[in-house]
Image (tube, rainbow, N blue to C red):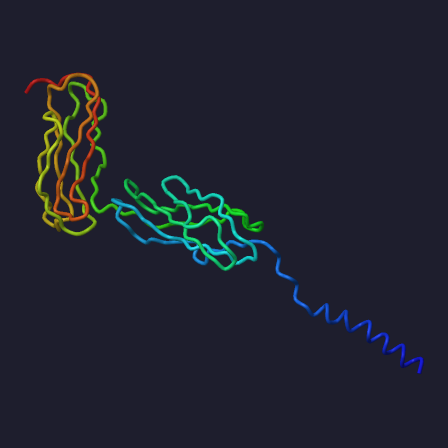
Length: 240
């Protein structure tokens, strides 16, 4: 009988311990910031505008999530989130705006979201893709360098379309001293490349010349291209 009592007493002491051990641990009382798609790839875009994207961040925690700051790397703008305080199970939007103008090639920018999440105080979002130039000049700047009396005052420039054949509607310079002349097309030309000769006047005074050549095309999105012209005149060319 005594043995039976000891066995029962032992079971009675063990059962509560087993029950407690089987219970799952309580969820921590804290906010948790989550973004299911933290990276946005915009693919290929012309470099004549902006890329915009809305990121959705949600609170997977048990306390309110406080979004304290949103900032972006250079060239990218992140606006204020749609809400500053996100309840458990709620979500907010963070908009990013990236200026592609003047950029070419692969681009990647970061947006940093600072919150009161103890595990992830700063969440990093990324925006990436390739900026393409539908119309470009080779060389991109017509540079004559230091130009003395006997210096070569003529350079060729090629206008290239990456959007298929184009028509040149008008070519002009912003100064009378910069003359632009179309050059004959190559025999195998397909309309995507157009060549021009740029010549400086002989009577330019000493000093720095800053001008531009402006090419107008029939390309819908980027109809006009401006090509800088730069020279340092140190003496007039001989009269011809």
